[in-house]
Amino acid sequence: MGARPSGKNEGDTPTEKSTMSTTLEQIDLAAKAFWAQHPTDRDAAFAVLRRENPVPWSRAPESDLLPPELNTEGFWSLTKYEDIRYASRNPKIFSSAEGITMETFDPMMTEAAQSFIAMDAPRHTQLRGITLDAFKPKNMRRLEDWIRGHARDLVQEMAPKGEGDFVDMVSMHLPGRIFASFFGIPDHLYDKTISAAQRLLAWSDPEACGDQTGLEMFADCVIDLHSVAQELSEERRDNPGEDLFSWMLAAEWEGQKMTEDEICAFFVLLAVAANDTTRHSSAHAIRLFSENPDQLALLQEDMDGRIDGAIEEILRVASPLVHMRRTATEDVQIRDAQIKKGDKVVLWYCSGNRDEEVYEDPDRFDILRDPNRHVAFGGGGPHYCLGNALGRTTLKSLIREVYGTMPDIKAEEPDYQANNFINGIHRLQVRWTPPAAGTTAAAGTDETATCPVPHGDAAGGACPAPSN
Ligand code: HEM
Image (cartoon, rainbow, N blue to C red; front, side, top):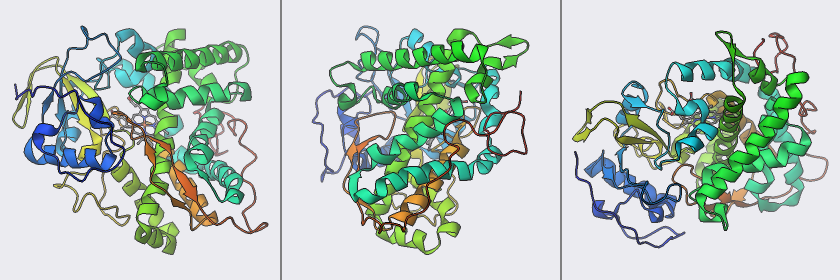
């Protein structure tokens, strides 16, 4: 097995970029302090790893999720693009069934919260299959105008203000409203659902946890989302609606429906996956264009021709989901690392997306970059992001609306989360010139209350749920 460096627990939690260069010995991916650094410093550390020790071993992560006597397992890290793709595409060797995070959760928590993302075939294939059709790119293309309507509504609400926190005004609500429409979440459950879905992945961030431990906060969010799922389940079993929740209840695989527990976990996974990733990606988009006015000018010069490339570059540079974990099912060698059966292996998308062997000048934000086959949605294989088309369409709609209405919007330095799983932004203060009254676009779609088109109406266009 490769060298297993001793841990370094101490460390500040700097919020500003460091001016010191990092050495291999200083890098400790298991330390909370590592994740409290400015993202630029973390990126610099991963560049050192890619160059000097691309498959390092780390001690057990500092974590509140397990009592210290149970938190004993270290982990391997894949920092190179090709290694991440290799592990992603070989699920027989790199299993998801033991959990998907660098930190280990109690198995009960994994079962209650992670559903099919923490499963292997065949159960993974069966459960993923239930909503697969709904999120296919062709459905998302049909939904583009409807999604853009949601983006427009939010931008019109913020436009007259001239300044504020972009996360609070827009980022958290855009995926929230879309998710609520897809799943038919009634108004009285909206805040509870979206707040839990958007906090759950921040178990390692002190601000998000407040006076709770990471585990307490995580468990509270899971309980809230389960209670929403139970309420919806009771209501929709008797009165199915035109929404994905009703579809989930009705779906069968070889004559079997999902159990109540499976439905709750499925709902948690979808709620979290759909909300938090897109939320932070949209804040990063505004941050990146504020830091790179030349790239914004390029985009504004030819919005239609450049928007798709810009979205891919935002996702590559920001890597909203920082890592996923697998567990080796057999002994396997990657580069110099002798990985043993049962070892945890972490795939660092944030690092693969800046691999110098794949990307020229990888730290540069370049919306014309081509090709740009990043691993922000995973490295391929069976777990590749189910919602990639929805994520892309949502970001695209938002960017068009924001820069169409407030072309001079500019962000200050964000307040980042200290988070090893999500590249999270707590707050993003922005300023812009409010458009003159009467010059803004008309309000968006009035189809925002429920999933717009009945099941089975393939030609109808807007409903994301497949026909029964
Ligand atoms: C920009 C936004 C998003 C990013 C960066 C992102 C990223 C990812 C990544 C990296 C994975 C893991 C891939 C792997 O393990 O190989 C994943 C899985 C997943 N994502 Fe996304 N995601 C985004 C948006 C969404 C949305 C909008 C949904 C809504 C449905 C979604 C649903 C899922 C689900 C259900 C999985 C698990 C798939 C499986 O295990 O089969 N994601 N996502």
